[in-house]
Image 1 (tube, rainbow, N blue to C red):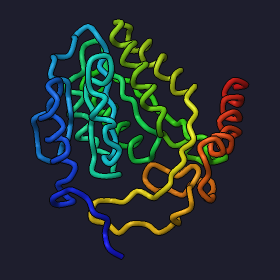
Image 2 (cartoon, rainbow, N blue to C red):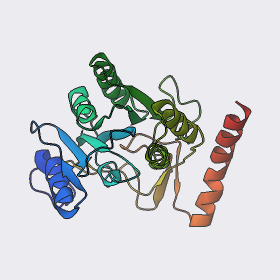
Image 3 (spheres, helix red, strand yellow):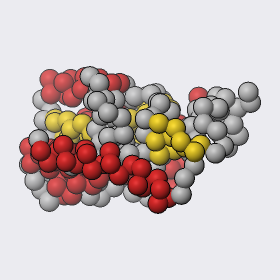
Length: 256
């Protein structure tokens, strides 16, 4: 099967070149100088030493997130891994060192095993160096029942949590207060995704799992299997189909 057409050079360089192009077109951000295997976008404006810094990130391939959320009132830095691959703990630690203030640093992390591991290791290493660090996990995907040991996947809710955390930090709240606001926002996020095609990695062959007239409810951000495959429907019918999962998730959260 032929690979899909993409306007890139070498697949291995796609992430770095995207970030270089992005910061070149935006005056308020820049790449953090360092080793070539570290892709970190930071705010050009110096960190306010009296306010909590907010860092997020994850695998590339979901642009404009997370690099596009760096700016006043949102992220202080975004750490990018390769496409669909978590950034290393080394990269996350470099971001913490670059933007953390005496007020502390909050890591907003999507609930995926690799992200939790790498951001968690970086947080522990940063604490050992004397930084004040807290971490909030975002797991808002309620399409799949049970979700197993790993828990819900993080999807669209991270945008809301980032905004809430950034606003709390901008108000000058303490690290504990910013983390609490972010956690409350994360707890109240409920999402169900619907996809009309499977994502394709640069240079890879496209998936034929979904037919031209099919859609998948609950498809993961990285192409993980969803809850069910259906024939394409109109927007109203799709909304009616995903509503029960959203309402059940909201009711469960209210009860708990």
